[in-house]
Length: 308
Image 1 (cartoon, helix red, strand yellow):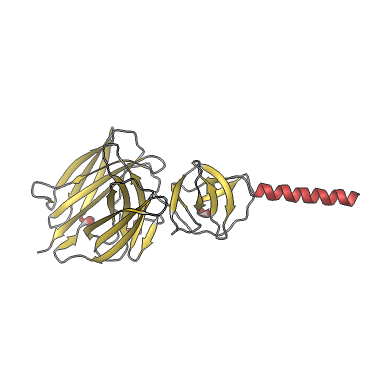
Image 2 (image 1 turned 180 degrees about the horizontal axis):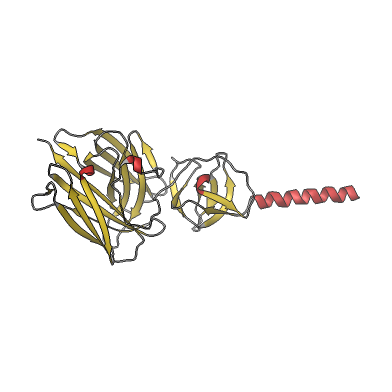
């Protein structure tokens, strides 16, 4: 009888421990927003986002260490185990692939940095390029829905870059296509892309084509020194041409985000004189305004030097 009691007790303890190990929550420890994927793979379809310091229902751990979780809206997906930890539950530590999106920052940042200065893991990468951040955006003042992303040229050479974006609904049906090209993208530098669709979409995919710069245009991102300052709800952007040739068609994007990295608003325009350029040694100044509160600002610029 005593042996039966001890055996029953051990079985009960084992049962309770097993049930407990399959419950609990996952705490996001990464200092930024983390992609939630349909499968435990960084190339799988994105189904949602998890945010730094937030906890989500823990479901199970995959063989590669990714956590299967349930988001607040009921969506189920996987996140990299290196971006989070299980709390109030004992679980085996396993090796995981790294995945992250928009990095957190409290200061205004000019994102015209060379590749060796950027250490954040890419959202998506290919031969000679990386997407380091991505956004979905829709303004109540517009009938278009935007997929926006930051693309870094990692090819080692200045390039003309073409992208094709396919927009999908939840069932995987294509809702639209956007094609866009930017010339003279400097090696190691980031550019901002905004692609539009006339229908609301669930997710998007990107195809990127890299090619050498055209003979008539040279890259000049490293020649444009950008500084920013904040005055109330405005950001003042100054762009100075430090090179010896005029920089033409210099455009800028200013991105306003909240603490979780969600895009709140953006502004876009050209920083040129009446001749459509910034002459050597000259500075062009613009401002960008956000009518709602924000926490982070990122600035991107792109221009070119004509080589006739």
